[in-house]
Image 1 (tube, rainbow, N blue to C red):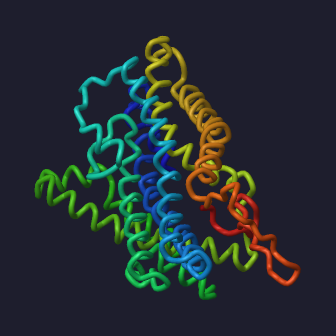
Image 2 (image 1 turned 180 degrees about the vertical axis):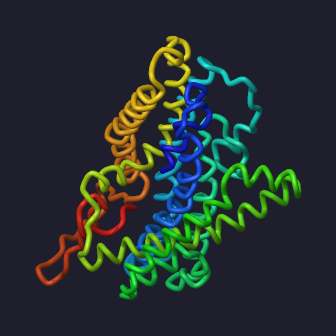
Length: 347
């Protein structure tokens, strides 16, 4: 849903496409669903961190949690940011942005990011992870006490406690609720609110509408889908599981690639002679292709390398290493990634 929005957003060859308005309205709900999924997954990650406190201690658990969140977000983002800077040297925007570089690289203060403009959501992810790490540090095994007001956490807790009811009615209700909420979140409605009340008031009301019209039904929607899987009524197809595992690379790369490809269409003179639908299909194919190559060749090896170097405790050559005896239990295997059916959420 998010990718579909960005096909038309900021790409001059597709500004006049007939599907732009429809996709912009529907795709906005993808952001709300994205935040719910993120919160749902992080609940299980925190639960594993809490469970590890008995064996490695609180400080080690907090360190591993915070470090994994850091290497999950920043290294690949910095690579994409650097490529985006090069793209803008080749194809500079009409209005040259002047953002503070340090804030863009650290993803703080939610400044407009004209290089990787989807990264505004990462700012909220960074804040979210910081709150979770602080909760682990302050409350240890009761880390969920301070964050249960978030709908995504509440959904995960319901599932974790075995509440698996009313999923059919809730799925239908969430869909209708979100559809009604999107009517009030249309760009034309926002501009009308700006004209009536000013941009500050319109923006504040827009955030409130996103919570009521997008956030709450998105949480209910995700709950319904998870219950379907938990009750073996429907399992996510393998192709969608694969795209889900690659979603961070897709998220970061697609807008940058779309911008570069759209500029290429203009310079090749294709915008007036080739069907906009064909250009759209080609743009999506290139964008997804780059993202999937990144997932296999950059993201996955990078996470594996940094995870081993930073989060795993060092064993020095001269230190004694005791082999577990026959009566000692061996460490549990690491949960599989979410790409395999029935496995836990991915770190």
